[in-house]
Length: 496
Image (cartoon, rainbow, N blue to C red; front, side, top):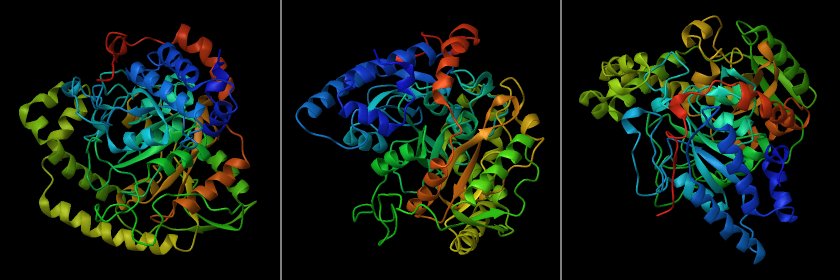
């Protein structure tokens, strides 16, 4: 039997155990499937379990190991994907009632790449409906129920990649795939105490992934460590090719990001405004982060170019989401969404004027140039990932987060397509995780990962084994069970 403590080990350690013959891919897959079934519904983290697909893949990968074939670090590692990512053998509901039975004929590109790398798909993980694109004020803005935080089931796991984050933190999957348009990887990673990478825009293919904003959507890994994220990102990155003009990094830039070998002598920027307006625990942990960074990097204070990043991002997302979901709104099916604010937001988004959208993109081009000039002097810019710990699950999002100043870097990086790495840096109020984000120039994932990996090597903020032990009692016996995510709601699926 594989213990739950093993299921929260990093990707490389799991791979090492597989190669040492401690257990087979099938045994590891069955262990994760069992834990996903036991705890996934209690956290509202899972929508669909693809058990037959997973076991078929596990048997095939075990045979390859026996024949001496090794696909790389992800060979035999079970994972889950946010339910915005299409799969050929299971519904892809986008977290929204109107699309509950939606089916696609083929897997998304990111799943095809993970298949090639030897990953084992366990199932589809919960998300805020339509990735929260029209604005929402409740953690319960999805038919699968509010995403519960493994550290405290009365706190939110974060949105919109809630299921991916809580599943990774709780050891329900080896790693997960999430998406971000404006904070949907960063926020749940920060709240759930895991690591995530938001790649440079277009480094990872969005083919087969729900479109919220064609010019801002990103697909990225969520893991228990930065090293794990690096392994997954290496597998899913799309190198530039002649038949995909304009996609991937420019010529001369490697398409597959690998962290460089440096362990020090980095230059890190921090905003002059950092430490202002955040929750006390966030601020204190950030100061300790800066002390750790000073051990292997020079740290300098800087200011962001004075531009309306949040206004730009909001205008662009509204305009593009209104186009993406035009049929949903005009048909009236938008009123089937769970969050009333989300319903109303769809009509607000439809009123964005063409001139405002054009001007937002004009300013975005200016922002891209000015941020690139600023970041060219540094290996990374570090900032608190979020201004607070996770909110109580029943509390209004606007009221809770309105108490604090939102770090401006997330809006700036997302609207300009810049990469970011989120990593835990301690615990704050109510014993919940806090995190920092490292942001860099476009296409510099190798350097960004090197900084984050060195910070990770020098810190040990999260004891996942202790979380597993706590979950063994707290979740199964005490967490409220949401009928919306009952066994009847979750669908099992077989490969065609």
